[in-house]
Structures are given as C-alpha cells and as structure tokens.
Image 1: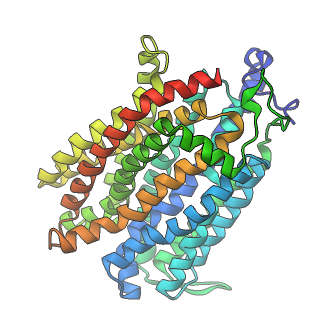
Image 2 (image 1 turned 180 degrees about the vertical axis):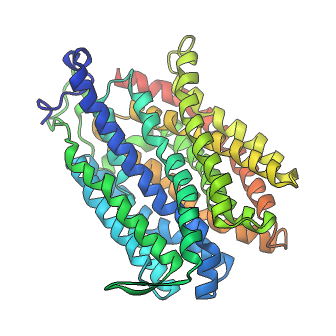
Length: 450
C-alpha cells in the first residue's frame, strides 16, 4: 500500500504536489476524527445541571462520570490498544473505534438512569483508547522528521478544537433542546433535551470517522532487526515495558510530567463551565459564546505557537522539542495563581483563556518528542503508556478532585475556581520538575534512533 501512497520521507513525495496533497489530506482527517472524540468527551461538562436535575445526583457523582467512568475502560484497553497499533492496520483500527464510541455516545441518549450513563462512558473510553496511539503512529510513518512537528500540532490541536466546538455549538444546541425538556421523535418516542443533543452529536461525529475509509496505511517491516536498521525491531508488551523502564530518565519522567500537566487541562476543561454557571449565572449558550470561543482561539493559538517557538529554539539547540514542552507548565502555574484572586467574569475568562493556551502549548511537542525518541515499532506501545499515564492521573484524579476540595478543604461548593487554581499550582509545579529531568534522557534516546 505504501507504493500507492508514498510517505513524506520519499524524495518523490516532496517533489510532487499531488502526492503531498494526499498525505496532507490524511493528517486533516485524523485531526477531525480526534476532534470529534473530544466533542464526545467535553459535551458532558455542559450537562451537569440537567443530569443532576433528572437523576438527582451530586457533584461527586458527576465527577465520577467525567473522570473514573471514562478512565476505567480507557486505561484497561489502552495498553492492548498500543499492542494492536504496532501490529495491525491503524486506519482501520481508528475506523472501528470511531464507530464504537459513536454508539457509546448514542447509548447515553436512551438511558433512564445514572448507571446507564456510567456504562455509556465506559464504552466511549474503551473506544477512544485506540485513537491517539494509532493516529500518532500513522503520522510518524507518513511524515518525515522535519514535518512531523507541524502535523503533530495539527493532530493535538484537536482537543482544543473539539472542546471549543462542543462548548460553542453544543451550548447553543443544548440551550435550544432544554427549553422543551421532553421532545417527541418519530420511531424513538420521548427524549430529554440533553439526550437529544447527545444523539445529534453522535450522528454528526460519524462523518469524519467514515472518512477514515479513504485513509490508507503504510507497510511496516516485520523483519528481524539488523545492524543497519535497529529501529525495525519489533517489541512485545513485556519487552517494550522493560525497554522503557531501563530508560526511565526519559520515559517515566516524561510520562508523569505530562500527566501532571494534562491533569490541569482535564480539571479546568471539566469544571470551568460549571464554575462560570455558578459564579456568574451564565447559561449553556452564554458559556459557549464566551468560554467556548476562548477555548477555540487560545487552544489553537497554543498549538500553533509551540512549533514556531520550537523552530526558533532549533537554531541554537539540536534537540529543542523537549525544551519547548516544559515551557507550558511554567505558564500554567502563573495563570493558575492569578485565577485564585479573580472576582469578575471578565477576569475569570481572561485567566481561563490563558490557562487554555498554557495547557495546549506543550501537547504537540510532547507527542513529537515521544515519536522521535521511541523506536519505530515501539511507538504504539509507548504512545499507549503515555496516554494511560496521562489519563489515569488526569481523568482519574482531576474531575473528582474539584468537588473533593470544595467539600472537604474549602468547605464551600461554590469555590470551584479556587479548587481549580489550587490543583493547577500543585500539579503544574510537579510537571516542571519532572519534565526538566526528562530533557537529558530525551537527547540520549533521540541519538539512539539516528
């Protein structure tokens, strides 16, 4: 298949605009698929009020939906997903996973219980575990090292793009459907407004997923390693795990450093809509029009700024991506501290915009760093470990930490902004320390792959 779809590493691909357009098309499709994966995740943050109203649950129960319900299956499937990525056709894995998470989102539209919502989130988490490792592994084979930071930025801008679209479009859609409360549909019957919103999002999300049928894969060698091509060695799950443990100065510090940074991202994105609703009495449409737009603009800005700064750093540093990655947590700590003191809607939105830029900024260079450091046939497992660490800490702790802190530390459920600020300061600082340690290990791992 690689003969019909040359990679960017071939000289002919660089010289022929038609071939370039085809490979660029694949990057765009992968970005759109990943984008809608985050629409499915983020839309629940707007539904805290309706779900609490209809099912009589607490903030902590909502935290379980936003975090553990998703992460339990995500982590369980994450490592087997990475193993599959290194062995099977990645474009088809993403196609099947995308259809599965669309079904999972649609399940929530037909449930009449909190338990049903929990199960639907389990389905979504298990399906989405395939997208990141498969997408990044495929991009790393389609594009050369010079272009990989750019297409990586395109791919990892998807969380900001999906989150922003979810808040903006989903906010207006939810506001419209919630006015009716109960909506009768032919063949389906009565649905709550927020459930109809989920059903619409599940159906629209199938459009980019089905476009994966037009994205071919590349052929990866399964030959035994040789002195000339050490990167072609195949790694099983156990061998790959031992390989990364042995090189812990990069892999472990990098995984947990990014996990701490991403925990801030997942905490803020999960609770910022509820914070704005309670502190400033904004409805879903108003939250979408203000915070949703900021997530789009500043999330994309962070993803664009990172490769630009990385290119500038490359003039004096031969291995700039790891250095660029650790700039994000420094910004996180600064703006999180400011959030603690804000008392107006405008100042709160400004801090949330700056935090969005800060936690989006390191994502593209983090994914690029991992793809550059890992051997070719370890990328799927390495990416799976990365996302398992990020998700276990981010989803497992972040969404539930906010209500725990407001209830047991601050003793005021209204202090969501202060809880988010406290979490961001603590875990942003940990991220700075761990990512600083990983820089030296990254350089050694990249030199091994040259």
